Image (tube, rainbow, N blue to C red; front, side, top):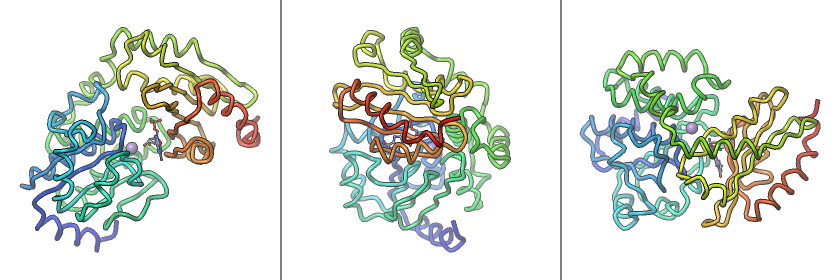
Amino acid sequence: MIEQSILEITSDLSTANNIVIVPHKGPDGDAIGSSLAMYHFLKGKGHDVTVIAPNDYPDFLKWLPGQEDIMIFEKDYMLCKPLIANADIIFTLDFNDLSRTGDMQDSLIEAEATFIMIDHHPEPSTYAHHTYSDATMSSTCQMVYQFIDKLRAVKSITPEIATCLYTGIMTDTGSFRFRSTSSETHKVIADLIKRGADNAKIHQQIYDTSSESRLKLLGVALQNLRVNKELRTAYITLSQEELDQNNFRKGDTEGFVNYGLSLEGIIFAAIFIEHKVDGIIKISFRSKGSFNVNQFSRAHFQGGGHINAAGGKSDISLEDTIVKFNSVLPEYKEDLGL
Ligand code: 5GP
Ligand code: MN
């Protein structure tokens, strides 16, 4: 983000009363963490700020400071629409295209606010007046820290802000182990701990609060694991019936896809989860090394994401989706094969 943009944003902020912050649909730790960090930061500067998430988020994030103030567009659109229409500035965080906000997209397109995008996904769209996009960044939370730093306001980072930013960096880097974790990431993390993020407590709140039924569901997922050694691929399926039998709650399947990648020799992992209400199969893809799951998902499963982590969907049955997946895999033999 060039200095000129920072000067313009500083000027825009100096006159803005109403600010809306929007994460992507199906918000994860980075989307909610960055939104809440920005919320606390801007509220601290005296603005009237609202975080509006397109839909609900997992229970394991429902302890983050300020999360009780988040509005859910899907539930409260009659209240959310005027807030969006009257916003002076709208921050869009952790996504690169307005379509990632689902049904909220139309309200955002109509809004007259100044848009500021902060995001680490490749190939950003051009809807924003100010675009801070960097696909080499570990997380949007790291970028929000750096945004605050560029505004020369790191001293305003409270323990609440530090907690939200730490959470998003931790969840998006698989606890600081993915390739996107740089020495700069660790410097940011060190400073966040200094400013009040309780690392052990945050880890516990996110990873050690599973229900018994979530662990049972993991058991089912692992039973369903299929491995294609030749194409170094592993995938998991979960049907609606299996979810129902194990009291599925939003967020319960978070991280399941990584078990496929934990196998020796496997470089591509996927999980296919049936959502009967929406009539879709929601898919997560993960890879090790140079196999680009963003491209794979864009090409075959209406999705996208990053090189090593992407999502997508399919409108055909779970069985047919698996048939399709297995039939396109051999096209990638050169990238996947030994
Ligand atoms: P997850 O598999 O955890 O849902 O998502 C992995 C990554 O892919 C995240 O960065 C997420 O934002 C992105 N992603 C997930 N679903 C979609 C999708 O449908 N479209 C696009 N463009 N990105 C997605
Ligand atoms: Mn992210």
